Length: 84
Image (cartoon, rainbow, N blue to C red; front, side, top):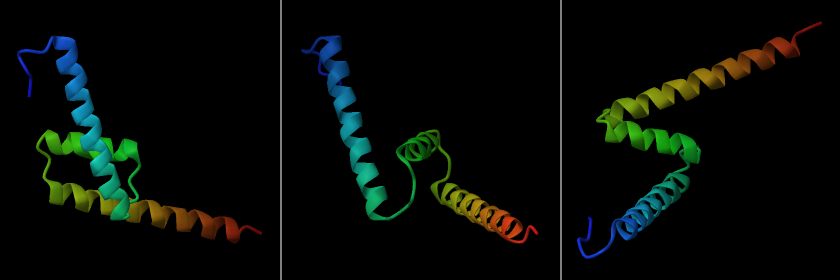
């Protein structure tokens, strides 16, 4: 929240510190829960949630994308293992 007694630069600095503390807390929680999300991915998730994306549907999509990527990786390994 903006403090009218502070100049705009001080307000901006205070808001940036709040955002940093918030993101650090979310990142620590993500790591404790072993989500496997990078800081960049976590930042995107937070942005999508702020835009109103349904959290449960987003979680399902992330799981589906991970499963697809894992399956594709296994198929590529299988193909390379069976060449020649």
